[in-house]
Image 1: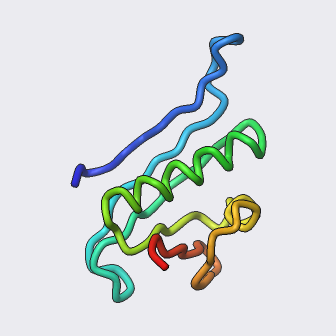
Image 2 (image 1 turned 90 degrees about the vertical axis):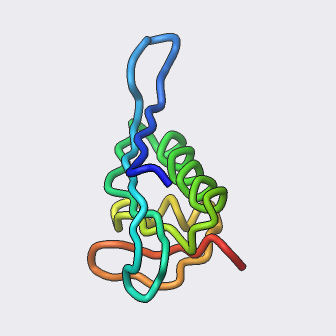
Image 3 (image 1 turned 180 degrees about the horizontal axis):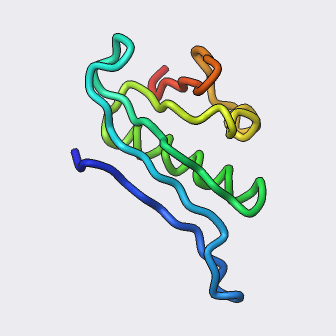
Length: 99
């Protein structure tokens, strides 16, 4: 597993960045052996935010990680996509990548 990932969303017409996300794998965090910790998602609008949320979920699943920790700021985007949220804290939410 790589040390981390960064993804950007671009508007080809305007030739500008409309969103980005940063994440890294964590080992042995909160009784999980391998999870993806999303440091930050910044997006111009809800559609770009949902794209990045889904991208990190699929990345976690592809790498066979137990779940994804998202910053609480993207909670509404996670809910709109229909992902099951196992728990929330004041800082983050946890979405399992299995079952």
